[in-house]
Every structure is written in structure tokens, then in C-alpha cells.
Image (cartoon, rainbow, N blue to C red; front, top):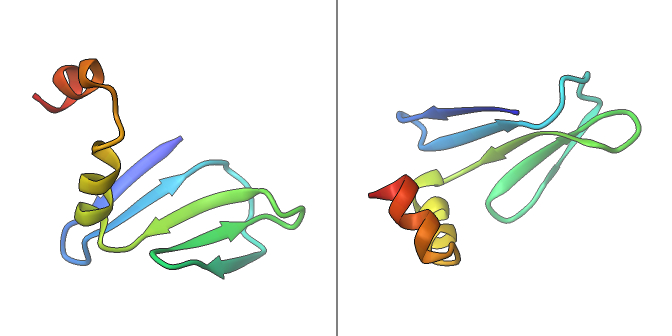
Length: 69
């Protein structure tokens, strides 16, 4: 898995697989790029800072302390 953040666009790109992208689906806050056999290949997450802030609320306290302290 490869993760990149574009600060100018506040976009988080999460590459899940190294496969050719065939098409994409747009969801509320992201675009999911999928392969020919419909496997998720790449996630483009918009407004990444808000997304990560919200998702961090669900993490166990021990992980928050270890990675976000």
C-alpha cells in the first residue's frame, strides 16, 4: 500500500493494489478507482484533513497515543 497527501488540494491518495485502473466510482467524499475485475485499486479522499480527524475519533486510545502524540 502506498499513501500520498497533496497539501494544496487537501487530498489523500491511497494506492491499494498495483493494477491497471479500468473505471472509477464517485462516493460522497472520495473516488474509488477499480480494476477490470472491480477490485479497488486507488482511493482519492477529498477534504482529507476533515476525513482523518473524524476517523481518528474511532481509533483506540493506545493507537492514538502511539501514532498521533
